Length: 402
Image (cartoon, rainbow, N blue to C red):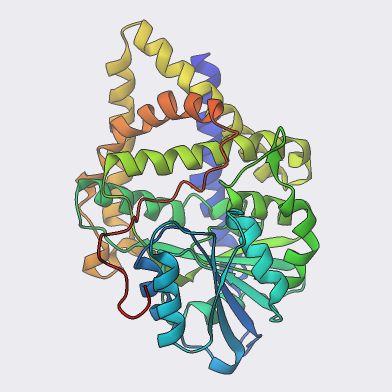
């Protein structure tokens, strides 16, 4: 069993850190070519549920975007928030131009709320932005410039942590996000089959979203509608339909990393459920992917379910510390790579953290596999939004709106 798992890890490592980097370097500018001067009409759609004041800050960031105002509109879709989010959104619509707030008739979930906004829009491009995200001013231009061919249906941007130095947990996540953006998607980026584009900042052709709407509206597990993993599911459906998906590091946004372990593990549980559902259901058409991505996809799927048993085996055989030592060596190596990487050095000081901050992953990674994988399997039928915990602060409703 250990030999098989080691093989999976080796394949994943080879694909992500060698083949992916090799393709990225050899393909050069083809990986991120641009269509200069392209200025399609854009609707930014922000799904909203219990984010409080964060939604106002997100709307405010749109006023600083470097894009023609006559070609840009913003739609906030409130999914019947139970806090003061709707009031803050309405204040944003009042204070800033081209902002519309709509409220769902009942709690429908993120994807169905976005679908509603897409149907009502008339623009060529839909840009999905999460409700706690701040968008960098040049992000829209960088996104739309990557729609260089008709078969490119979606382009994702880079996510930075906006609170990297809050505490040890946000510092650790800063490095984790760095690897997720800089290295882990190299293979998929190079072959234009990025399998998960984040809702934090992704641009889509509206025509493709309308084409896939019947599939997106009916998503469920055993008849129970689910409201997690929408971004991964949508991206996979786009790739399955034969379109290309891309990602550019030049379109940036900033999101808040969880500051408490409870919120962090809630986030990881959401992502774990999403991974389980996506990998299992995606097996039916994995053969249609590029061979390198198909191998990578299947290896990750097997690793997701097998690795918890490896940890349990080491615990039973009183060899957990040996496994932890291997984890520590790998994490320490990644921390050093982060520290000396040229792309890290190019970041402003406030976006960089000390590499030692990554060492807690030695413990958190096996814990996530051991606990969250089976917990995710047992709770696949949840229909909760499971927000990130930006709850209402008493007395914090915007004046003149609440």
